[in-house]
Image 1 (cartoon, rainbow, N blue to C red):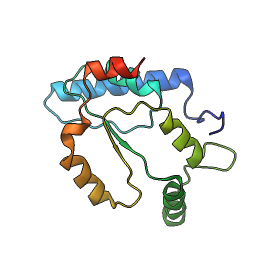
Image 2: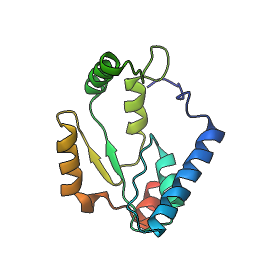
Image 3: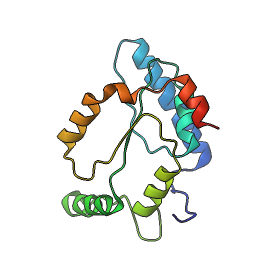
Image 4: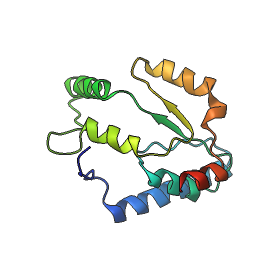
Length: 143
């Protein structure tokens, strides 16, 4: 993994966005909604973010397909809708994998390399108990 920080990871903007995401998730949960927050959070930032979420129970799912599959999906996405997430000389699929390698193994981690989206959903729902993250796990992961 290179020393590159994703350009969208401006520390001030990131912290503000993460704080707001936690607040919004908590507000929706208090109103009776099931809330899903999708983001790219790595390393100990995952622990800090989960600690900022007040709602219990709290769940975490990390999707970690292989680098080759990330590249192939990126290529297909670019060909299909001209969207580019990884640009040469910037944040790469290898960087993503490196950041994920530095992330504490809490919650449910899935290698989705060989799964369709429907199979991934089935895996998550079938292992829902594995997604829950309690305070003790976060304390342990932050050490």
